[in-house]
Image (tube, rainbow, N blue to C red; front, side, top):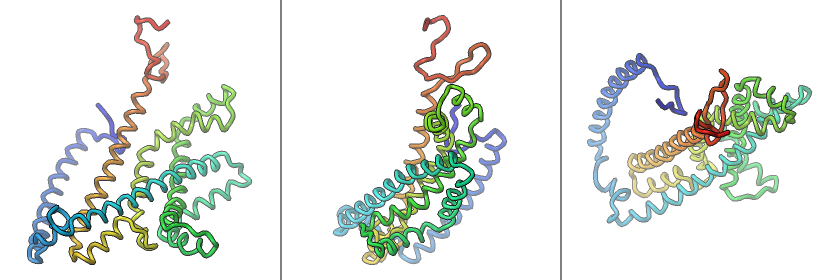
Length: 297
């Protein structure tokens, strides 16, 4: 049996409850879908002229629409990728600083993290775009969005990483210190790698949040996917069709991220094997495990 990185596998009774609930929800959803379809049909939302610019290559505006959407998607992914990288780096540093901080100044880090966790990300983006230029920091719009996203998500990731470190058995730290490792080595070589693996589902979920939050770039006129969709709607007058397409795009990208999480978790699991020696379980790299009676010294 294989386990998912994003949720715990349910038992037999839970599977039955999930099946019954899913069937009921499916019937209810189908009924609602039929009602919505009938309403849309009355409003001519299934007319070909509303869908053709998005899905008919022969339409005169098809290439223009997809060029705009393609450029906007690149802008969205660029902002998300930069924010993710900076958030992971800064968040990890904040987590390490809070873990290693002395009691005399730890409250400063705690106050900083809690302050930025409590501020809505949209305010951070707006603050970066309006206040920083007044201070002489003149940057492209992309970087104001990245700064706002990083300011919020880095403190969230810091708490995720700290929770991962605190969830590890104390024996991990004690064993590393008994080998003569410095505190920085214990964190970087022993605790952080295990914490990242333990908190991988939460980290991936937060990265999905970063991607979705790029849509807030519209408040600073950044040409991301949702803002570009609004411009297309103003010209084509088909909001349902355009927003449905944009929703599908986001779903596909977020699904790819979830699959990436499962792939990474499996790769990490395959990298180690558990062996039993004198009644004690030890975890070794896979290429170091030998089968009894086959040699290996």
